[in-house]
Image 1 (cartoon, rainbow, N blue to C red):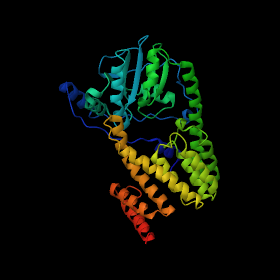
Image 2 (cartoon, rainbow, N blue to C red):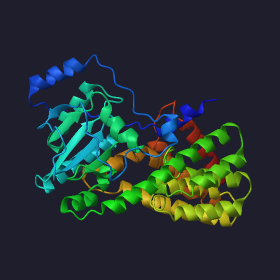
Image 3 (cartoon, rainbow, N blue to C red):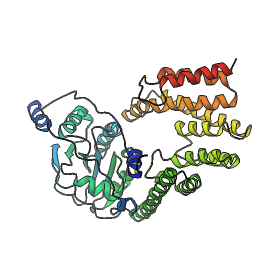
Image 4 (cartoon, rainbow, N blue to C red):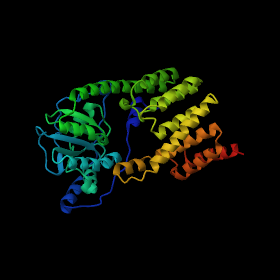
Amino acid sequence: MRSIAARVSQARRIRVGTRALRRVTRGAAVAVLIALAACESPQPMPALTDAERATPATLTVGDPAPWIGNVEWIRGEALTEFKAGHVTVIDLWAPWCGPCLAALPHLKALEASHGGRVDVVALAITGGSTRGEIVRAAWAQGASMPTRVAIDTDGAAAKEFLVATRELAVPRTFVIDGAGRLAWYGHPIDVDAPLAAVVAGTWDLEAACRADHARGANRTASRAAVREYLLADERGDEAGALAATERATAIPLADVDGMSPPWWAWQARVRLLVAASRNVEALNVARAAAALDGIAEEPVALAALARLVAPADPPAGSTLGCELADRALALLRAIEGDASSDPWHVYMREASYTGHSAAMLDIAAAYASCGRLAEAIALQREAIARWPDDPRLRPTKADLVKTLEYYESASK
C-alpha cells in the first residue's frame, strides 16, 4: 500500500504538455542558450514539508513582498527592484504547464492595457524543467509573451512566493503595489479587477489582508482534513474517513487545498454515505453539493455525483441522479461547443476533453440506473469513440465495451 506522503504527492501533481519552438529571432543567441542547457537536469518541484503543511502561510497579503532573487533575464529590460509608486505583476509559470502557457497572452494584453504603469514579469520556475525547455517555450510564445521574461535559476522565487504562501500550483500571479507590498495573488485569469484597483489606488488592502488570513486558515484546515481522510482510508476506517469528509466539506471550495479536485470531499462523503446505506443523507449532501459555486457549473463533478446517487434509495435517488446527469451533459455540450478563439477558452476546451469523456461514462451509468437505457447506450458509445486506446488507462476501452454490452442486453 502506498505511503501517505506518496498519495498526497500524487493528489497534487499536475501533468500538462509542452509546446514546440515555432519561431527563433536572435537565432544564434537562442541556439547558444539551448545548447548550454541541453545537458541540464530539471530541479525538483517545490514541495511543502510536513511542518509547512500544518502551519499557515509565512507570506500573506499586506506583507512586504520578497525580491525575486537571483533570476536570469532572457527577455526584456532587467528589473533590480520593485519601483516605488509602480505596480509589478509577477507570474510564476512553467513550460510543462498548459494553463500557464494559455494564460500568458492574457497577461500580455493586461500589460499593454495599463500603458506602462505596470511591469509584468513572466518568471519561469525551474522545477520540472531545464533551462533549454524554458527558453524554447518562451520563444515559441512569440509576441503573446509579456515584455519581461526571467528564469528562477536557483529556485529562490518559488520558495519565497509559492512555498511561503502555501500555493504550489502554477500558474500563480502576484501583484505588488507601489509601496512594495503584496496586494493580491491567485490565478492570472482572475487578476484583472484586483490589478485595476491597485493601479487606480482604490484597492482595499486591509480587507484583502483579512480575507487572505481567513483563506489561509481554511487551507491549513483543509490540508489537515485530507491527511485525516487518507489515514482513515488506509486503515479501512470508514467512519473516520466520513468524519474527515464532513470537516472538509465545511471549508469553502475556493479554499480547499491538499487534494484535487476541490470537490473531492463532497464526492467521497456521498460515496461513504451510500456505502453505509444512509441514502437519505447521501441525497441531501449531493443536493447541497450540486448547488455550490465550483460544482454547479462543473460537468465532471455533477456527473460523478449523479452516478453515485442514481442507484440509491429508488425512486428518489434515480430522480436526483437523472437531474444531475442532465445538468452535467448540458454543461459539457456547452463547453465543447464554445467556438471562442481566446487562448484561454481554447485551452480549457481542449484540456477538458479527457475529463469530459470520463464524465460521459458517469452520465451513462446514471441514465442506466434511471432506466433511460437508450440514452445510456448512445452516450457510452460516444465515450468509447473518444476514449484513448491505451492499455495502461483504467478503465480500458475493452472494459467500456463490456459495460456497453451490458446496457444493450438490459435494454432487450
